Image 1: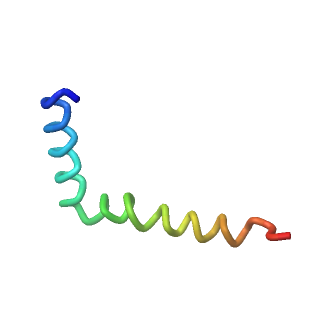
Image 2: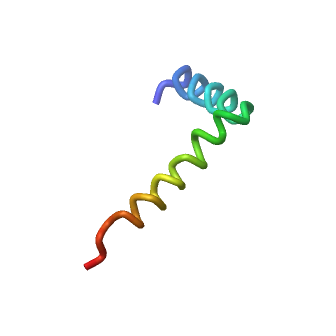
Length: 44
């Protein structure tokens, strides 16, 4: 893979994890969605 692209992805990931709101969007919201959708699905 292109080293420039890897450096860019690494930089953006570090920037995203610095912001508290972005961490919540990345980690908390998907967990809540999986929980809600898991409870909403019929388990027949």
